[in-house]
Image (cartoon, rainbow, N blue to C red; front, top):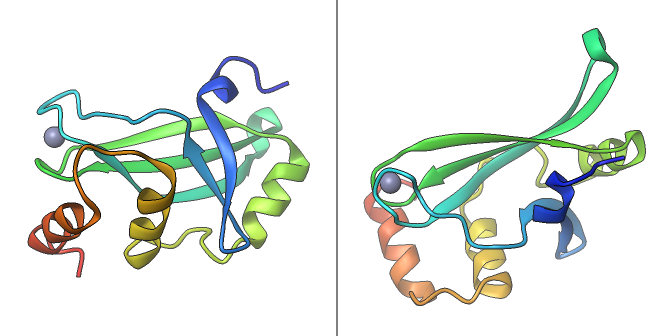
Length: 121
Ligand SMILES: [Zn+2]
């Protein structure tokens, strides 16, 4: 299962905690700044017997908010739910994730300043 969408999304570990994370940088369709992960929730839709992980992403510049629905297995759902980062709005964790995982043109400090400006701290 999982198919094409899982070619774009990956479950990674940050300090031993699982996170659904895009394999490529995502940019805002409105203003082209970076779309950063806001939080993620792994869940089961009873109506269609379907496990999925909803990843909420927010533009660091204009506030555009997007939700990605990624199909996952029952096992992945259970593991993601155990993560301490499950359902949590990212702040410092977001910095760790992006600092470690993505080679942005922007520096860590620049992203941090932006997030502070937009009320993340
Ligand atoms: Zn934007």
